[in-house]
Every structure is written in structure tokens, then in C-alpha cells.
Length: 278
Image 1 (tube, rainbow, N blue to C red):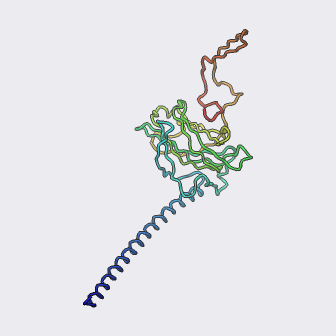
Image 2 (cartoon, rainbow, N blue to C red):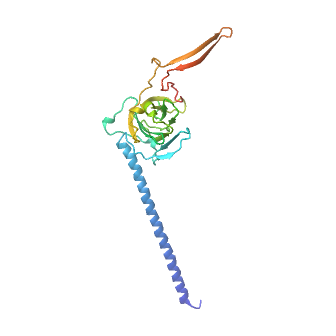
Image 3 (spheres, rainbow, N blue to C red):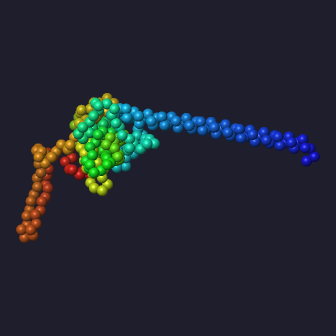
């Protein structure tokens, strides 16, 4: 109090300290914001590039997968594409050239690779295009794909339901373990494309049966192929569907007929039941 000059010097020094702290804080915050903006901008460019790539080329998709575990089967696991900001369920993949025009039941695109060392068969269900709407009264198209490995049928998996699109993109990869090399000559991939209905039983649009012998899987390289979706191959008029041995017993006193299925032989490997659950 007795020295006013000292007090003024103390105030000036304190002011300089406060200004230095504020300036340093401002610079640090500004640098962090610039870094965050750069990271966000590059992420947005990657997402736009992925979506635009799918629109430019109808039946081609970059293979950037993220891994996760499928709890439905202990011998299978799957991985799927990371979800962009725009829901993939609503993305329509439209062809810009007339050569990609698809009629009938549409097409299914998938890729297959085999690891002989691990005895693993990896199947990536990429997308379907131009699926028909089985119910004209509905404005939306909800679909999914079931996959099983024939003839053993030990590996059964299915994709998620893609809503509101006749050109659904699934982007899910399934790994089937304990698949011997000998099965590549005799086995087949059986895809069933279905429409989802929460109020009634799901309907089958069609199927794709791809023999593994048609694919060159000996070099451990990924093979991508596109197949036509066909109607169910078997109908009531088909012959050579196998033999069924049954036993019938009728009791007149009780007015009762008992039927027992004893044996079945020569049944086809493709699932004949119309129920999607079978």
C-alpha cells in the first residue's frame, strides 16, 4: 500500500499471465477443431465414394468388411459392411447402361473363396437386383437370403432383412468351417431369396443352386459371380424324386387309419418344402 508502483507492476504482470493463458488455450482448441474437421471430411469422402461406386457399377462392390460373430450356428461366422450415415436399406443401385437390364426374377451376386489350410469356405452375399414384388398391394419390398451347403446341410445361414428396395445390398460374408477339400467337387451352394412378411409366412421368390465344381477355388482366390434367380426346380409333376415306403393300418371297429413312414430313398438334395423355415 505504501508503494503504488509495486502494486501497478503486480497488476500489469498478472494481466500478462492471463492473456498468455487465454491465447494458448485458443490456439490449442483451434488446432483440435481443424484436426477434427479434417478427419470428418475424409470419412465423409470415403462414404460418398462407396455409395457412388455402387451406383456407377451395378454388380460390383468394394470388399471392405468388418468382422463379427454369428450366434445362430457354432460352425459359422459372418462379417458385414460398416453402415454409412445413409441407411443401406434405402439405397437403390440403378444401372446407367441398358446392358444391365434384368428380367424375370432378377439376379444374385456373391463371391466365394476357400482356404485349404483351415478348411474354411467363405461366401459373401453381396446383392440382388430387380427382385419382383410378389404382392402388388404392397408398396415396399423387404427381402433376405438364406444359404445352405449341399448335400450335408450342416451349414445354414441367412442375411439380415433389407427393407424398401427391389435392389437390396446385403454385403455379408459367412465363413463355414470344417469343409473338406473333397466337398468342392460334390457340394453346391443353395441360395433361397425370400420376401419378409411380419404378419404371415415369408414367401420364396426363387433360388440359386451353384455347384462348387463350377468355381475355381483351388488357388485360394476370391471368385465373384452373378447368377440368375430361378423358380423352384421341383413341382408336383416332376418324376424321379425318390421312393417312400409307408405302412397303412385300418381298424374298422375304431374307424381309425394309421400311416407310418418307414423308409425314404433317392430323395433330391434340394429342399422340396415350400416353407422357408425348412
